[in-house]
Image 1 (cartoon, rainbow, N blue to C red):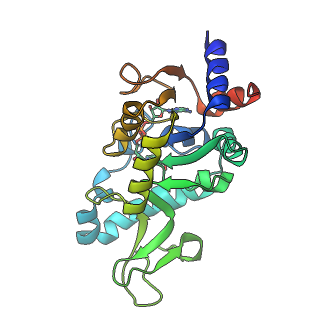
Image 2 (image 1 turned 180 degrees about the vertical axis):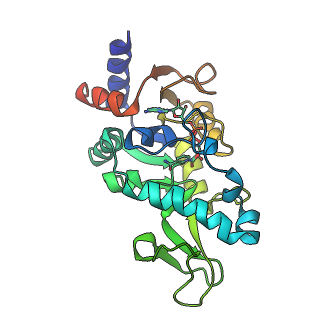
Length: 246
Ligand code: NAD
C-alpha cells in the first residue's frame, strides 16, 4: 500500500513541470532538532515568551539566554539528514523548482538546496536593530551577553522572525508566487498550525496543484487538501521516492 503510494509520487514528480516543496520542523527531527510542539517539543522545556519580539526588547538578557541555548547551542551542531539531501538532489536534477521552508535551522542550505524561500528567516544570520547591518552567525562571538553590532554598537537580533513580527516581504511574495504556479506541492514535516505559512499549500491546491503530504502523523491538511498522504519519517520516505524515479 505504502509502496504503491511511493511509486505514484515518484511518477507524479517525474512528470511534473513545476514542483515545489514546503517544509516544516518535522524534516529536521531526524537531524536531532526537536519541533516546537508535541511530547519532545521545545515548548515543553522552554518558555515561548523568549521568542516574542516585545519580550526580547524589554527582557533582552533573559530572552537571549533561551535563544542562545535553543538556536545556537543545540541547532549549530546539527547536520542535514537524508531528507534534506534528497531535496537538494532533486533541485540539482531540475525536478524541484523551489523550496519554501518554515525552518530557520539552515539545514536545507547546508545540504545544497539553493532556491530557498526562507518564510521565517534564518538563524544563520544576525541583523542589527539600529543600523540594519547583517552578519553571519559564524562571525559572531557567542557569550552570555546578547551580541552587539561591530559597526554601530546596536543590539543584534537573530534574523528569524519572532512572535509579533511580519514575514520577510521577498520570501512572502516569492512563496505565494510559487504556490500559485506549481503543479505539484510536497508538504513535508509540517502540522499546518502556523499562520500565515499554513495557507501556502491551500493556495497551491486552489490553483490546481496536486498535494503530496509526508508527515509522521496526520496534520490539518490530511483530510482537507492532501491528494496523497504518506505517514512516516521524511528521511526514510524521500530516498525511497528517489530510488523509484525514472
Ligand atoms: P510543527 O512542529 O507544528 O509540526 C511538525 C510536523 O512534523 C508534525 O506534523 C509531525 O507529524 C511531523 N514530523 C515529525 N517528525 C517527522 C519526521 N521525521 N518526518 C516527517 N514528519 C515529521 O512544525 P511546523 O508546521 O513547521 O511549525 C512549527 C514552526 O516552528 C515553524 O514556524 C518553524 O519555523 C518553527 N520551528 C522550526 C524548527 C527548525 O528550524 N528546525 C524547529 C522547531 C520549530
